Image 1 (tube, rainbow, N blue to C red):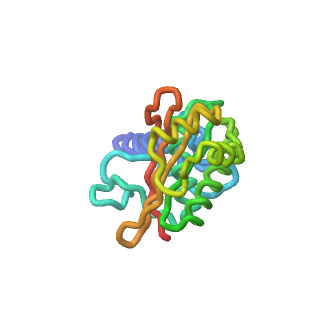
Image 2 (spheres, rainbow, N blue to C red; image 1 turned 30 degrees about the vertical axis):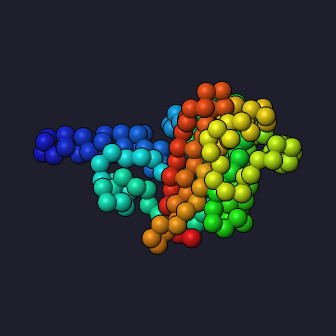
Length: 199
């Protein structure tokens, strides 16, 4: 009988540890214990994905990939949470370009990601109108894939500390959203995120 009670207490303790370690399971706003700040995106019932060791619910061949998001909006929300955990608070950010075979989809993704970053309320987001002025003056082409050097140059001209670029590309039955955040001062990639979604 004592052994049974000890076993039950251990299981209860493990459950509490799991809830503390995985902010997406603890209820509430999805991440009060998340030091990366990924759970601070307000106003949505979407769950930010937390990378798990081993073959969790990843859904990929080795369980390392996150589940397929239902839409581009959900994929952007999840990717924004991942990037947010690796960008310093109060950084000035410019979302430069998200390349896609469908230009309307790419432009929508840029605007939606900008909105999500504004709603995090941790960053200073550079106005997109500045990007349009610089593009006209410098004749930058942002309709397709933008290389890192060009993105960093644009970020400098806009006065941003970080720039975000990305792409949307189909692969088999799903699409992949890939984003990266570049440090304008060093050109270093500070964060990357990849999410699959049904599109």
